[in-house]
Image 1 (cartoon, rainbow, N blue to C red):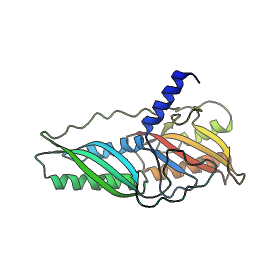
Image 2: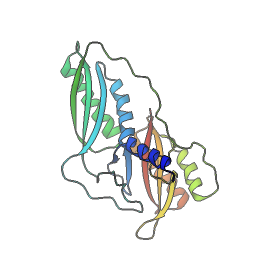
Image 3: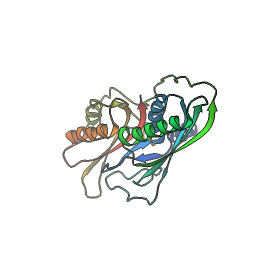
Image 4: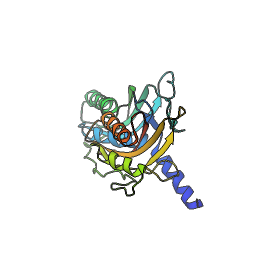
Length: 238
């Protein structure tokens, strides 16, 4: 790998942010902080009088046990367990501050828990600015998927890719994590079972837990029952 390509890879990894474990996902499923932020910004736009500036996540309380499976948790992923969502926002000065912040906190919690499948124990809302004018809706630019929508090839990885792309809620495959440049990676679990990791971009049209479950079924349908399927969501399209 050339020095320039290595630098670009490092920048891309930093831009993804931390990898957040999805609640109740056996075998491992993670969502990048950048993808979660994109989904939560869409939610913030729907709360009148509020302007979401930044969101971040930290572990809350004791750490949970690391998930097993053929693909270990990425180094930037905290162990499964409750998270605290910290959101920084601006609020229109002419509005009722408490009403706006309560509505924003509830909307963010609902999206994080139900829409994204994150184990969010609390939402810490910080008002950084009182806005003179009500915020205008931000342009709804799509986050780049960084992957394929029509994979070629005849091998098992290509077959898994095609099956995953047919799942509702999958906007595309992605190749943003790691240095291998592959959206579908085959491997083996410690007990000798087959394992695969799928990296993808999700869409906002379906709750993420349902998408992840369907991706697992699609991959196992190609590779066989008992396959350990890990899912890594690195992009989000609202």
